[in-house]
Length: 370
Image (cartoon, rainbow, N blue to C red; front, side, top):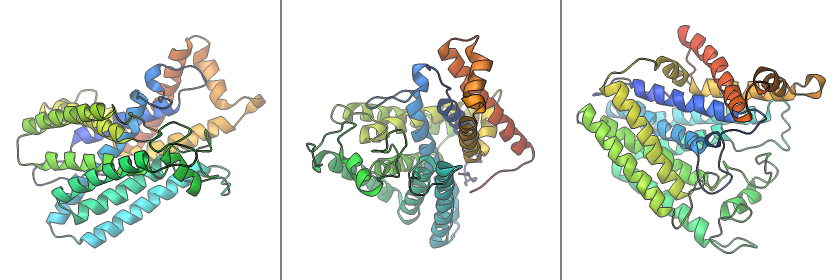
């Protein structure tokens, strides 16, 4: 999502850089190669978190920040809110359809195609968070965020699930999995087929993650010095981290369920990462070495889609019965690096190839604005 200048803030380089860092990290984590990886590059199987689990919520959080900086000035100058919402609906529908197309590529078997996905969740969170932002003020946005978290907590802990005790949060037995089985049967993540990490119920707290980004966007527009904004960003981020860890005593931090403690903890983590970028780039004025991340951030979703298409093709094309991915991994890295370092190098190779694409697009000033 793009940012616009506000009355007090020019376009934030820190937002582009931070978004680019997150996108490059996502590509590296998604393309680790067929070998054992370093622990931070792997998603935690169920409860808990690792660096890989920070990436998606951070991107959603930044969608909320960018949305605030983009929409607030338009609303202040009197743009029609209904038209802004209609524009948002079109963008969200396009992002959702691109995600669906990426899920089905290249065979498009609609009887088994996965309906949820990363882009689909981004689209839904973007649309609902935008509607809340456009038709409420700050207090209403806080109320919406709290309400979403409370409703999710009650659904996951109080509603009985057939064959399970109410409040069970195990992989094979929880309310979110039950709802997905009712509405998404046959159209879920191929790795499980019986539950989806971007399922229906877990999208609720993902919307809250986007709303946390909106609140941070309000802070960035507040009438105070840049130094004060950075300080409050750090304070707020640490408060959210503490709140998530504290509530984790009653509901575990879990990305696949996107639990309330996960939403809080990762909003805090996202805010701290961004606050560091903001202080370094937009307060101190540091620029050295940041341009590659900024280039990534300006065409983030385009790079993500290309990474998915390339990885899918590299996995499907199998000369001699072995995929191109495996050929490349073995012949370029595995023969001289240990498994973890080979996996890291393989992921970085994807990052560099896609950076070349992003660099060329940036040089030609081609920016895909969905």
